[in-house]
Length: 341
Image (cartoon, rainbow, N blue to C red; front, side, top):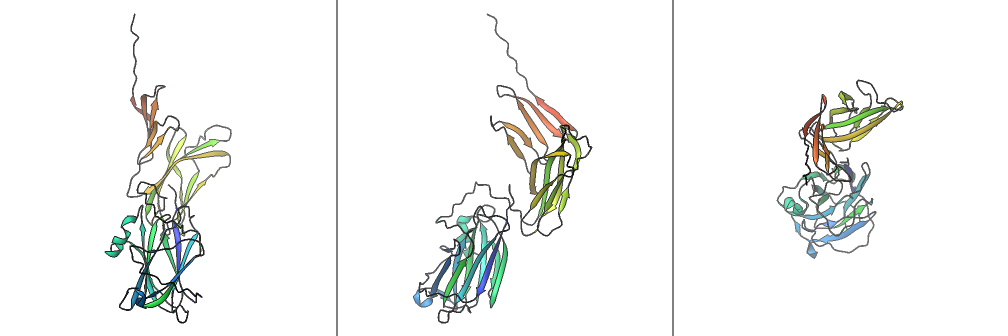
């Protein structure tokens, strides 16, 4: 699992956009939002209750949708701007409010149900805001390759909507592929997590480090929070010592992990690095890349159950890592005698 959490900057720009477009928007309902995509693309058009655009109580409601790219890298901003212009003056002096719904898909609400959830008021709301004179910037927690809907309510029955993108991180796909069985990128929300790993130190001469406790470290940093440094502890088992600790991530959702070697006379190996929620549990499996047989099963504490097979592929032995070392918990042997002629 990889840590990826994105930052979306939505700027509500109340400035002048020069345009001669006379294209009229039809009602972009929540069932069919305007798809925003591409790099430095401008989407604009007039809305007018005299041209079949619904205006209720002096307000016009529009919906836009976007989806950050799957390969968007952490720390790179996504920028989306919008304004409501007065068509007669060309000035973006019309007030509006907005809501950002999402995420839909994967860990969020089902993507295929977004219209129903928004309509009945049960969709997750990421942010709300009211435009004012000048530039307003929104920083939010945006998940890669998820689906979001922006609801814009303009305080007028006649105006021009201008939406502008400034990055290449809005893919222009005609269809949103929803994969409920896919494993999304690891993007931790603000919470506590258990981090564990195994480390092995080998002298550059080729001999194992004879230390009672290894000195290599695992450093974790989440935004501006104080870094957490985890060190090995417990018994060294077959040359490996376990690292385990609890960290707290910030609300940006990024998590930086550093493997630190404190002694330049040794070679250090890290294995079975795992991160999972503090109130959860995790079991992982290791398969032989050639035979595809189950080679090991790592329990909630990252201790392995090791499976050994004979040349015919039959399970002959099961071993278990414990705090006291590796123990054999099961052994099977089969013998067949040759019939005498």
